[in-house]
Each structure stands twice: as C-alpha cells, then as structure tokens.
Length: 297
Image (cartoon, rainbow, N blue to C red; front, side, top):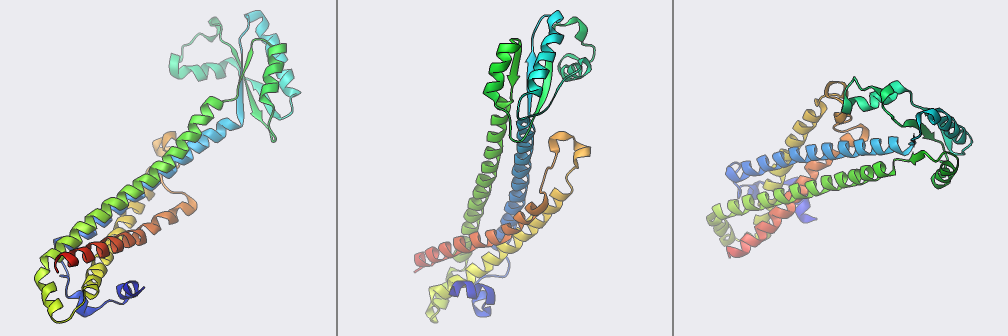
C-alpha cells in the first residue's frame, strides 16, 4: 500500500535518482505502446472471429435440409410426402422445397452459371426451419425412412460443431495473445529497469552512504517506469482503437469482415489495457529493482 501511495504522490528527491530521459525510459514507453497496440488488435480480431463463428453456428442451428434422391418420375411424389410429414411434425416451424433456380444458384459457385440442371439427376432439397421447442430429429429420420426412403435429414450438426469449437478456440487464442504480450512487456521493462539501475550504480552508492534505504531508491525506479509504461500503453491503446474504428465496413470489404472490431460494450475492454500495463510494469520494475539493489550491495 505504501508503494502504491508513493506511486501516486511522487517524491521529487527520489525521482532525481532516475534520469528524466534516456534510452531505458524511451524503451519502456515505446514497448508499452507497441504491446498495447498489438493487444487491441488481438482482442478485436479474436472477438470478431468469435462473433462470426457464433453467427454461422446460430444460423445453422435453426435450419436443416432434407435431401430427396429418387427416380425422376417419383421425385415430385416423394417431395410432397416429405412436405406432408414436415407439416405434421411438431417443432417444425416452416418447410419448403427449393426451386430449380435456387438449386442452380447453390451449385453455380462450383460448376458455373451454365449448369444444365434439367439434364442432371439432381436430388430435391427441402429447407426446414426449426421452431421453439425444436423437433425430434431421430423420430423424424425414422418416419422419413419408412414413408420416403430416398429422403435424408441433415440437421447441420457436422457444421455447427466445428463452428462452436472455432469460436471457443479463437477466444482462447485472444486470451493467450494478451498473456504473451503482457509477458513480453514485463521482460522488456525488467531489462530497461535493470539497465537504468546499473547505469546509476554510483548514484545509488552515494545515496546509501547518506542513509537512503533500498526501498526508498526502488520506489523512484518503480514510479518512473510504471508511469512510463502507463503513458505509453495509453497512447498505443488510443491509436489502435482509432485504427479499429476506421477498419472497412461490411459493405466495403465483403461478408468475411462482418463485424470486424469491437461492438457495443466491447469498446470498453481495451480501456483496461493501460492500467494492466502499468500493473505489469509496477511488479516487474519492483522485482528487478530490489534484486539489482541486492546485487549492488
């Protein structure tokens, strides 16, 4: 608590121990700013990717597809049977058979616009929307196999599971990135503080001769480097947030970049980075200072 109070109040006499500028101080500010900048973009990308995966998984969760494979002369009859079954199935909010034009549009990205749909034995696709509560998938499959043997239900489970896993891993990746960035910041601040202490070894010896305690000397270094890290991180965070705000909108960049960046309350998350950087610098500098002072004894 006393160190935290000294950090806020300051001590002019103690502050003279640490040069007001120099390579170590500039390195601390630059490192904190760069790490905060990278951390903001890591957060933005992980949150946006997670939202995108959740959106895809959510869209697939409420829809399913029934594929009907049958001879051409039986296809219409089986399609009607399946539609009748779906109309009687609790939990199915809506169902409709896709037209030839819609099926052609689905295949166009792979086979081109000139696909002869009429000449190919394509299965008929039925799109169904799940209600609330949902339908019994196993029961529907059993009924389809009994009344329409050529109909196969695809509830998109194989698509939803990878999406949910992707969202979870992307969020975890964001957390790990922030942890690595914090570790790198701690390492750089430790090196900078150690270098500053070594450069001021003669001053430290003189202060000890006149009665200064190591805790008094350490507070000067802790305050200087903590405030440097806090200021650098604040600048880096602000610059990164401005950059995120000017990222291309969805109508300019396409569907893959939908929601890239922060949305709503998530804009408040990066504001925690400067205090976090200051805390990391405080712990790293205090540890390095006390250790180096013991070595200079």
